[in-house]
Length: 263
Image (cartoon, rainbow, N blue to C red; front, side, top):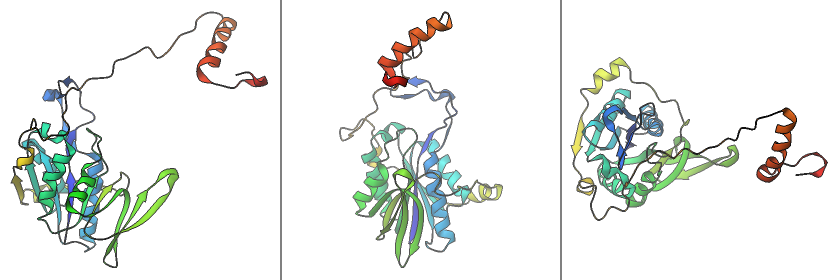
């Protein structure tokens, strides 16, 4: 069986963001791999190196330039890639994306599918769970450790208050990996050179061909920066006057309990 890592190309957080209708002005925009997905790729590589899976396959959906995300993963050590070529606007609906990804994963002899917990640009965090549902696979989210034991998959899930849940999953399974689950490796020069010889299959899924299709459940309509509002009031004057003006503001707005029972 194989391990399949689902990755997404997202805007570089250090880029200059200029809203332009439903998306961003890409003239000064850089792209890179979604940070959460880097941990999913590393987990897939570690499973292959441990002999738990035969191949580590990377899959992404997006426009032609998203192939760079696949090449980066191949340079990290992934064996082969699959690129679902589609307009970037088609990625707005996580169900349509999951449906296209599920069709590809179904043919990969996937014993485990690894996805990032969520995407930095959309923040939906739904694609992994939807893929699991469409393929009738076991599912776990917020995973911080992955290991095989007695033919089953054992994972650790991050809970509140620093607690951890240890969960056993029947195979095949889909897991959403949390940041910090491992230490993602960098692409070495040798890995970059080797990645040029690794195969990348290109597929044009009909589910993602038209971003304005009537079956799209979610569409991106407008992107805008939040309006700035005054967030501070400057009190000026003598210290006694400032203190006298500050006390009623504390009492009415902050709910602070003062000495002597006053609030």
